[in-house]
Image (cartoon, rainbow, N blue to C red; front, side):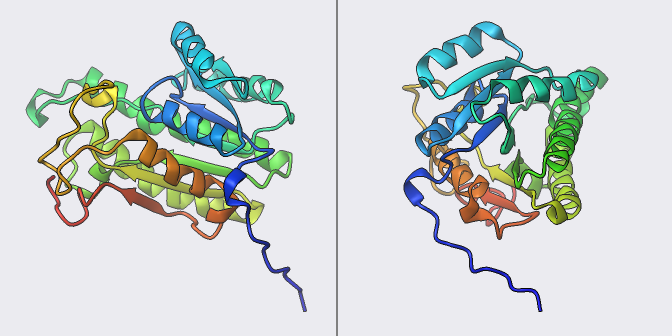
Length: 260
């Protein structure tokens, strides 16, 4: 008979203490909100992006428990090397958490989508996420790390998909289930978090703007900090029994109201 120990309660104040997280798209929008919330939960954070100036500005506002790294997730052949560079930045010499927050969107009708638009969005949102997960998964397996991977999906994945963005988020949900299936035997927990319309630069929202949004049943946009609070739970040991799931935090958008 195999004896399985009873899990011990987690300290909710510092649920990510001693952990290091790598966050792609970490210099703005949801990625930056994730970084702030993770640091408050005791985590050391490495924010990744393609703009050195933006990364340095974010680093100066986040305090001591953060480092920065240039990662272009479109450059697939560089990702394993970049993961090693990130590991070298970690005070505990490892990466425990990956958050795939890099993403693109473009508002346009189905009939106006050009091939370059389609490729650009799918390459970042779907292909980049796939190969970033592959690089981290190899590293975690080889080093026996009981890690967490969190992909950023969207409530758009609940709607009929006719835009590259919606198609990419449908793919994220399916990929998350498949990756969770592959990695769970290695004690690597994979999930996705799916926000609705959030007050970020992707939707042309900046600090101080009104967050009224009558297209959502709650009457407002979500705030990045609200999404980040759930993300902390999901990448901590408190969320270990959520496996291969996409957790929606959309104020009902896409769930009880399909086209909002």
